[in-house]
Amino acid sequence: MKYTEPMLREGALQGKTILVTGGGTGLGYSMSKYFLQLGANVVIASRKIEVLEQAASELQAETKGQVLPIACDVRHYTEVEKTIEATLNRFGNINALVNNAAGNFISPTERLSPKAFDTIVGIVLQGSYNCTLAVGKHWIAQKQPGVILNIVTTYAWTGSGYVVPSACAKAGVLALTRSLAVEWAKYQIRSNAIAPGPFPTKGAWERLFPPAVQDKINIAQKVPLGRVGHHQELANLAAYLISDYSAYINGEVITIDGGEWLNGAGEFNFLNQLPASMWDEIERAVRSANKTSS
Ligand code: HXC
Ligand code: NAP
Image (cartoon, rainbow, N blue to C red; front, top):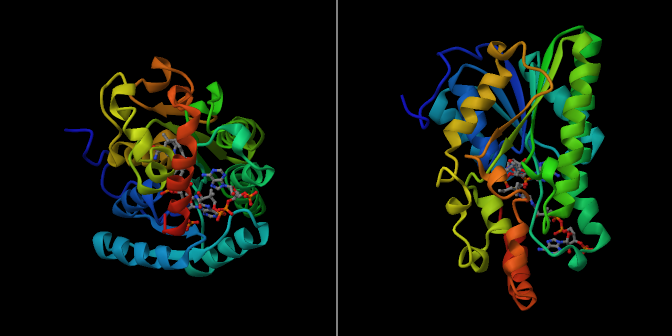
């Protein structure tokens, strides 16, 4: 057995319908793929419908599972409500929500505009709240149990320079996780979170580790185990937390980072080492990521 291999037994998520925000790319895609392999139906929702449709057809071809792509900007509650309606129309049920959608980029805080903060907090915190509220209202009205899994970061509790809007937003999502773990337990709704260390994805790497930064730091060397994460090991953990095998886990945040945060809390504080003169070049590189699809 290796950490790169699927962990749960066949059919562990059979018959469940799981909504994964940001499920068309990166870690959301990898989690969705594994949920499908375990027998779930998956709804992938984010802004770019062409990216979602491409992902859905790849996922269906690879897993033979059922995938519904829906265009949804999680910042807008009405779009979230429509996503749930479309999910119920297609699959008749919804059993789990994975709040995975996020926006982030590195920048010295004093270079940010007020809108930069609104944008990141809007996607990460307001977006997670919107999805949680809409799905939770549905579960409570239907008197049915549910599972919420929030993808946060290790700097949700340590804070980190150079990603301040994201740190504030993820701290809020962690508070949401722990608050509802208690409040909604009476409805048999569990809330947990995963805090990943570095797992290579195009979206994160373009915005957080552009070439000028990678020239200065070896990301794997920040991790005591000396490597970055493998998507399957995160998908294994997510599937476990969604499944009934974790029925007594509620209000937990599980760190999967090879020991990175304990080795140097504040994941992007290392950017203090960069001279101020480098930030124009870095900002150009990071902004260019927004012109391509994530
Ligand atoms: C300074 C910037 C900036 C930059 C954007 N802004 N990029 N400011 N430096 N590099 C400012 C803009 O000028 C604008 O403010 C405001 O932020 C909103 O930017 P827009 O481009 O208009 O927003 P939008 O098109 O909605 O794009 C959102 C985005 C983008 C978050 C900026 O990066 C995106 O779509 N990201 C989605 C995918 C993603 O981020 N994945 C990474 C997740 S990784 P003004 O005032 O100028 O209008 C993660 C975990 C990290 O979260 C941990 C890893 C180890
Ligand atoms: P990613 O591929 O860029 O994923 C982000 C997703 O969010 C994209 O699919 C994007 O799709 C979606 N999204 C952005 N804004 C949205 C909005 N307003 N409404 C709906 N969807 C939106 O990056 P990733 O690395 O896989 O990140 C996935 C999650 O893991 C995030 O929560 C991130 O914070 C967390 N994380 C990642 C790492 C890592 O090392 N990769 C480490 C710690 C935590 P659209 O562009 O189509 O909207």
